[in-house]
Amino acid sequence: MHVIGTVGLPGSGKGEAATVAREDGIPVVTMGDVVRQETADRGLDPAKDHGTVAQALREENGPTAIAERSLPMIEDRLEDHDTVLVDGIRSDVEVDVFEERFGDAFTLVSIEAPFETRAERIDERGRDAGEADGGESLAARDERERGFGMDDAMDRADVVVENTDSLAAFHESIRSVIRTDDGKPAEAEADP
Image (cartoon, rainbow, N blue to C red):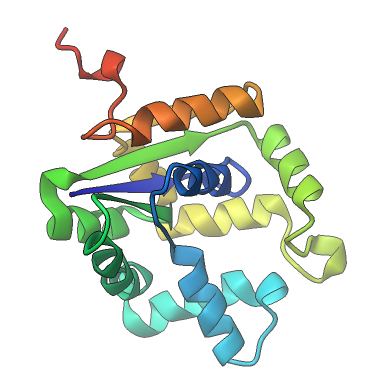
């Protein structure tokens, strides 16, 4: 059993990492899907109200609410697969939930990219409503995500993947993480 969690600011490449996992036959549990479903259940627009609902879920049910709602989905997929990727961890308390449940079988991967690069990616994907369309600016999203404790979660990562090169290079970096038993690339496993 191996559970790989990804953490990173909006536009860093978490969705691309999930795509690579799926291409390798690894099921993906997207924590954002929990929020999107809750947003729809509340009759709100997932493109505009995602952040508001994510914050509301944490305020109403505690800071681990989304991680806890993800656990049954992860465990369900582990019944038929050796590895599951959890896309979109947002805080250190969510990391605690996964470490407590999966112990040494949990690997946290921080995906990182500069603000300007992330802003370009978000504009290109056209999935998120920007400030001009009634949504949040990237700076506001970053601030909200950091308010959840994302910086602390990123600091706890077992593996850091810099997503500043080509898409092909990023995919290869992610494959090197997901194709190992413990999620750490071979060069990261060697003792100093």
